[in-house]
Length: 143
Image 1 (cartoon, one colour):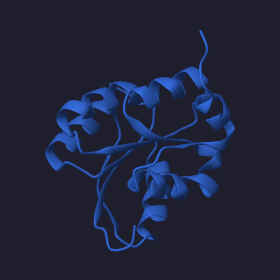
Image 2 (tube, one colour):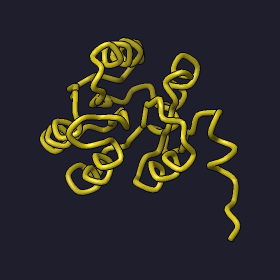
Image 3 (spheres, one colour):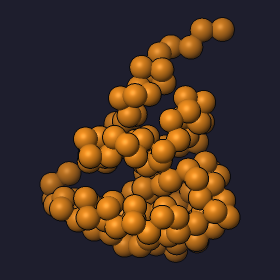
Image 4 (tube, one colour):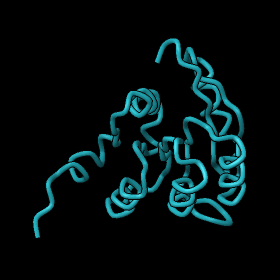
């Protein structure tokens, strides 16, 4: 990550979480925050206008949920990488998020130990899933 200027859009309806994410990312060399959004519709509009490198996205959002936002991002901001940061730990939702172009999925309760490694992995082109969900989501599926 060193030497890269990475623009970030933080999307969460809870202002305090946006502040926590901003503080964590501002300490990392090369990352800068370009914008924040409090709902899904605002997130899509800001992503389209600003074309961020990284979108940190909650699932439980007003106006349009995070999964819907991720689908729209494919069209309006195709280069943006997505890391979900959410309390939703449903394996089904995690799988949908990963299918809908997310490269990272972090449960908020694991933020302190997993968020920065997730961002680093995603920016390096790798996938990251919270430890609590990784075994399930990475297992081969059988019919």
